[in-house]
Length: 186
Image: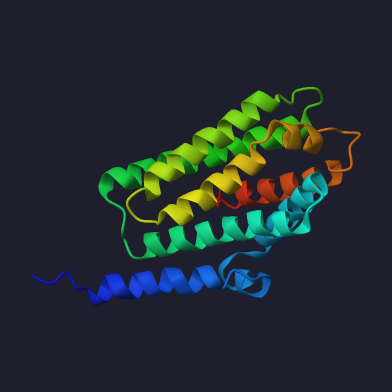
């Protein structure tokens, strides 16, 4: 028996096409203004921290590709009931991470790089488990690239240094996160 499904084929094509369209102009079609502003700041943080424009672009492009592909999977109801439970747990972890990031920014001397790094590492592992059966090893590598990059304790220390060059970027990121939380999007 042949296992051909036009629905599966269409979804694969959509994921493939969208992953190639992760340019800034295309992102604005799929991602709201606040999220786009956060992505721009994450790019600036990565570029400043690494001193490498192409590495910073790759990390943000990987983040966008993953978000779009997961969005396609959700829209096509590809997740099982168990996976939907994991997705809800992942969403709660992201919410907790956002609240922690904001709190560390607002409350002087509260930043703990190990706590923030651990939240991001746990979120990475949850996301990898969620998409294990749905995305390719290349996409799994993108997830690891993004989360490992932003969970790097040196980057986090640089970002959360009130006297450092990245503090204004962190302020904008936290303002955006606050808006997403208030709007119920995170």
